[in-house]
Length: 252
Image (cartoon, rainbow, N blue to C red):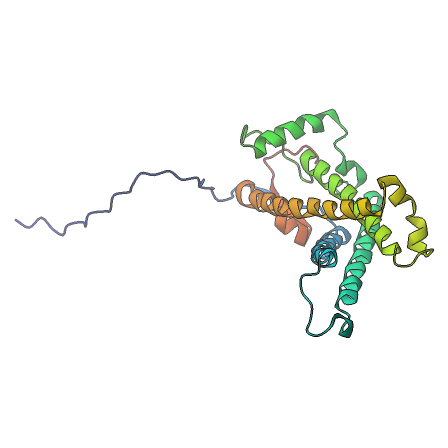
């Protein structure tokens, strides 16, 4: 008796552990929210490029690790590196001026109040956000269209670090021309910090704050895009993102 074609045996799935979480496809009613205007987005990317250039050239200035062929007197490599370094510093200052202006001219997600968690609810939500990132309460994160309170504090801290880097950097720059403009306006810095060597030390240490912050910033932005579907990365390019109409946001 013919039993018909047989179904080939299926391979057995081996049990095992996985850290992956299957993310369901997005569904529902979504609408576009414009968050970051063009000046802010432009300053973000220009400042990011400046910080990378400043870090590379700054480490070279602090400890030159290569020279072109021939005697040191036959080329001007250090001078070129310093020119690039201080040009990037001037451009970074320009982005800071635009960002400061945009604290008052931007929309509600870009203004001064969006950089400081001054309300009691923001402090409560900051603790909830920390628990969310630590996977203590992964399903109870507060929803913000703009920056959540933890981001507000970290970005404000980086702005303060950038200001300190700029001040100490131009203090060092002013030493090359005693009695010049930068030497005069930054003369109080060595006295405050206890000498020029400490100014150089603080300037070097502060750049590490950026080098630590940048990979964490990129990781959390990618994590938010992949796991939370917040469109964080695309928003700093396009200016906005799609959000679900079924969700309520603290800052809407």
